[in-house]
Image (cartoon, rainbow, N blue to C red; front, side, top):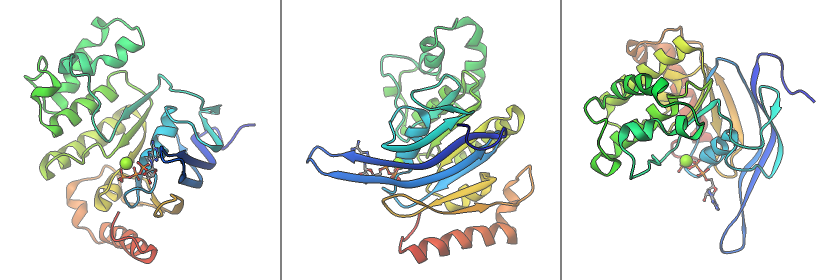
Length: 263
Ligand SMILES: Nc1ncnc2c1ncn2[C@@H]1O[C@H](COP(=O)(O)OP(=O)(O)OP(=O)(O)O)[C@@H](O)[C@H]1O
Ligand SMILES: [Mg+2]
């Protein structure tokens, strides 16, 4: 059975996820989550801490099994990790014995592709994330925000068509965060990738997205999906525009009505 239309990349239907904890009880992390993401779309996800955002992203990445429901990627059921996905994890999981360059090239090594053919792209990505000159340093020599930026370069090195990002800019200062937002939009605009990005920042969610998925407190359900009709390309000046403020206020109000303090 095919879910969605030809334009659909991700089709999620009534996905549930229940974790069995070490104490022996069950934690329902996701309940009846259904949505579609079109090819080339930029979707952001906001929701209170613990509502299942990371769980959802890991299920989409094929590294965590759903308990029930159907999930297809380009029409194929998801039953494991795919080469065509780049993942930025909430905590940067870098290999401490590999340098910055070697960490960025990890997906290339895993896919047994020749490093040589990708070194130039890897260098350009390291520059793009502002780590020029740190190519041969080890993760232990970098700050948390710098490690997170290595993770972003690594997610892009094999030029995946789907990018899944879990709070990729959470550890960055406001200025670096803004410039990374613009860089990400540039890459997305140029390479026609599909992006799904989790963030705690409602303004960031609105700034980046075509649509914002708003999740309820745990067990995470989709409580609303908001279309962001701001023009593209986006610029930082738009953050001060009235339509931008209207979207941000609508999402804040929504969280207040759910009894959640903030996303
Ligand atoms: N491996 C696990 N075993 C048991 N419970 C888990 C596990 N991973 C997550 N959970 C629980 O599932 C729920 C959702 O967790 P998840 O990490 O997906 O939330 P989140 O929305 O990403 O939160 P945050 O915004 O704080 O990152 C939480 O209640 C968490 O305690
Ligand atoms: Mg999380």
